[in-house]
Amino acid sequence: MKFKHIFQLLSLLLLLRIFACQKQTEATDHYSCPMKCEGHKTYEEPGSCPVCKMDLVKVSSIEAPVVDEDGISDESIFNLTSEWKTQNNETIQLSDLRGSVMVVVMIYTSCEAACPRLVADMRNINEKVNNPDVDYLLVSIDPEKDTPERLKEYAAEEHLQGDQWILLQGGMDDVREFSNVLSMKYKKISPIDFSHTNIISVFDKNGVLHYQQEGLGVSNEKLVEAVSELSK
Amino acid sequence: MKYLIACLCIICFSLAGNSQTPTALKQIKGGTLAPLYGLDSAKVWVDDFQLDEYAVTNQQFLDFVKKNPEWQRSNIKSIFADSNYLVDWKGNLELGENMNPNSPVTNVSWFAAKAYCACQDKRLPSVDEWELAAKASETKPNAENDSTFNQRIIESYETPKTYSKTVGSTYKNYWGVYDMHGLVWEWTSDFNSVLISGESRQDGDADRNLFCAGAAITANDLRDYAAFMRYAFRGSIKANYNIKNLGFRCAKSN
Image 1: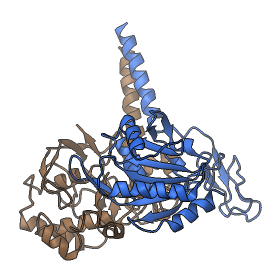
Image 2: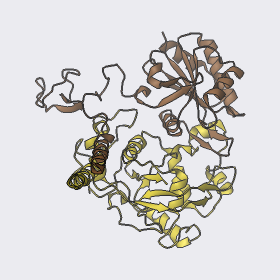
Image 3: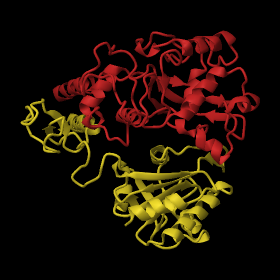
Image 4: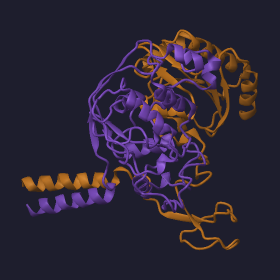
């Protein structure tokens, strides 16, 4: 009886091991022409391209080279699978925000120097763009302190009201990853302070980065233009 | 009982077949570290942690991409790596002709390195952890004040093409970890906490410490020129870069 339990446990462990790292590999392989003679047409068997006769190359069905079935390109931040909490304590993935142009900044709420100016910039951009379909994201680099409750308070203090304003708390690792996608740098320099670069980024409706504005006190003109252009 | 033995055997096989000799972790004793720059207080505390004995090799990375097609060269999403990803490989599942399978894997992005470690149930070491482990010489856990050791590091930075060496071919440090200097630069989880690129200057936000003369005046340890080079390198790269002399090793919390 005891051995049976051990057996079951070990079998389970074995299964876990096998599948642990292979979440996305079950899909069947596809092949396509490396020269894209027939666009993104794929074949189920290896062979040669009927047009240019080159050998077909394997493409993973999930990882289509340019755009997957949902139209998300491989440059899109919607490829990130991390989960975030909003100021309303809802759990979301970035891809849930698809369909709106996004203006994104990374801040922390106890910041007294640069962040208030960045947030003022965000409000300013919102006013100039004046389009309710554009989302404004503030992602905290201090997820330990910036809980959904704190973010909600902060939104109220900073007059970031309405569905357009989305404040996010993520895991430490996921925040680090997100900052790397923006090429944004930050470091905790004391228990309450961070040093960080000041970047506001604009993403199109499919999550592809289009424009970044660096620095404080720079003109928002080009950024506003980029947002308006993308949200047409 | 038979079941049990059979099962253990299957697990052993699966371990051998599945993860191709995972690199052994070595225990690193935590302690205080005076980072080169950037903190209000002079020292940070680093907890005990474990670090891979060797840098991840070409062969190990090949095994990883075999099992995880989304990280193969032609499949990788451009948000996760620029076009230099595994650029010297012959194909998705084939190393370059003159590549040594036991050399450290290079031309890998931060995203790919992170995914590799996560797959081994490990993670990338932080800058502070890496620096703590790297200040050990063969005989001392802290060789910061050992001028011969520092000199050797600088010399190793000047040696070209060390990335084609076999892992384990330089020196084994006090913790039993090989090649912390002299093989390749290594990714760290928070490499982008070094703020010295153009925009940090522009922003005027805190970190003038690493700029030329500014650096020499305010850094914590004037002797550590090698550390300057490491921090400057970290400050100059982006997570989707793939560089010929930049590899990685994994770590684990205790």
